[in-house]
Amino acid sequence: MLIDVHAHYSPKAYLETMARVSGGRRPPSWNNLPHTDSPEDVETRLRFMDEAGVQIQVFSTGILAPYAHREADAVEAARITNDAYAEATRRYPDRFASFVNLPLPHVDASLREMERGFDQLGMVGVTMNCSAFEHSAAESRFDPLYQEMNRRGAVVYYHPCGNNIRSPMIGEYGIGGIGPVLEDSVLVTHLIVRQIPIRYPNLKIIISHLGGLIPTFLDRMDHQIGPHALAEPASTTARRFYYDTVGHGSAAALLAAWKAFGADHLVPGSDWPVLLASETYVETFDYVRRSELPQDDIDKIIHRNAPALFNLPA
Image (cartoon, rainbow, N blue to C red; front, top):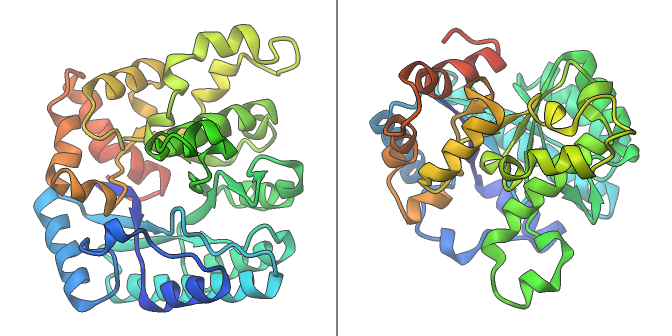
């Protein structure tokens, strides 16, 4: 079973709410891409899924998460967003699933919405941005969320927030396209330094975009990131995570992630609808199928790892 763990969905109610409470909007480049809940976009999404052999997409908001400084605004946005996502999964229970979107940075409200998402809406995991209003998702203020997710043995999926890691060296040079992979990389190091996978061993953590730069400096992390303060080498902790295959068709990036993390820790992702601007949905997964990896490892990555994460039959 091919489960796309990295797919974004923009119901009208969600878009209107985010524009009102935070001024957030999808980028203009998405205007002609099928990401909304219009009948035409949903039909296109299902048709593309059939063509690519994708059984299920797991929805997440991505950069435009329901976060707001005022708790009431964040709660309203998260509830409306999750309700709209749940409606889609009720209409197409065999094709769509959803992560719970949290009203961060408000922890108690997020715990309540997490409970509602799991116990009432039937969602299959939790999604968090790499940071919320300049606070890393690994900060101690969010420990109660990790405690609850650990108790539930939950999947937690991280996505960049689009802040270019607060660096003018990125934003002022107009190279924001590399910002998300830097966010992924920094978050992984934060999770390692904060020992999140060690302290909460029942968590199943998914990182976007093949882990960003992480595959290229595992050994450097072992040498230079807290070698005497961590419970295990940083590279060992990094291999506890799962990483989606969003790599813009780069065989080199896929090979590096495979060598760094192993086939058992890669899962299919598409960043729907972003890559549709440059490649077909079929191609997003075919680059893995055409890779030089052993066939059994390709089968694990495409068909077996994600169902195991979500406790579904492969």
